[in-house]
Length: 438
Image 1 (cartoon, rainbow, N blue to C red):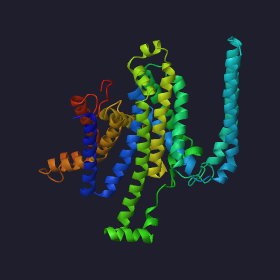
Image 2: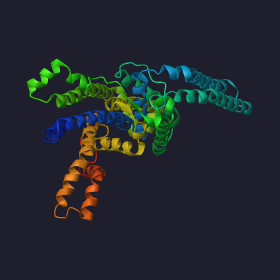
Image 3: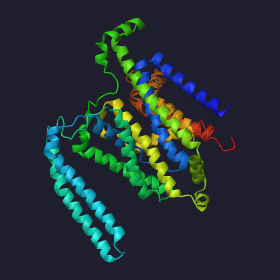
Image 4: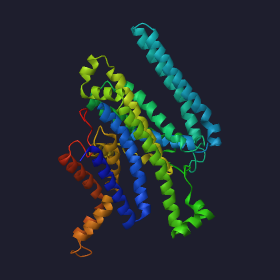
């Protein structure tokens, strides 16, 4: 079986699993899984660009996804005029002072001779700038957060269509990745993983605690949709006629229709991303990246800027992760900073890349579908399996009740078993990277 035939076979099996859920559970459940699979596939594709192309171990995935989620709020939510008038000016002034402080420190570092006086001056600029920034920033944020904190308490956004936030989310993540990459990409791979994980925790902590920007743990709800609302569809004559012609219940069909619209949008984004990723992989740039990945010393000896190319691929992969983060917040219709758990979900994305086949873009997509499907269905199937196994026991048996209460943990067992089985029988993933000879 050729690699292309294998890919078609695996994706056909994946489609069969989704159809099975649709027929035997519900189409709402099946389409919900499909939408999250599409988002997971986009995120796994971004990680595969970093690891599969360049061997960069990024453990900060959730932090960049959170920046994408923040972009959905900044772009699509309406502005809060009372909050802007109360403290928006002070916050803007504090950011301007911070930017000026950084600029002055950089100029002093580059223009002044390397003496002790230069170091003292730079420290003085930073200290003065820090306290001046806080002098305006603290009262500004307090004033913003005091404006109807139960309902708003933040600046709001620009009120633009939420689809634009997908691009802005990629830009937010890309800018952060460039800043982080300039500092961390000179580190060894294990130190890079530790640094990106720590920075991810910092990003998530900021989004959780800066209420003036994201409402923190109070969450931002009611993010506008790029698709129709169910209630509007149910009241539309054309939709009622369509549901009647299909013999479907209007309420149920409206939910299915909305999920199909989301699936269409997410599929377009995934196809665009994988088309661009494939073009990059098969270009001279892609061959150069794989050469650097396989032997940095030789590539450096050939005159290649290894650190510069690593920065490029780190930013590109992170942009895709940021887009996926904005898509996820759009699907949820709310920003929930506490749901970004770097250790837990970073591991899950990496399992997707490893199971699918690192270095193979279609493998990353397959891994995104497969892993998220089993992650979602494992508790349901696990509960059914435990009920069958414990059926001979009495209804109030302590062991039976304990096992049934533990059904949610089946997803962790399932992920471990899936990873072990794939690594045992296909160590390079279900769709391995194509070698140059092939």
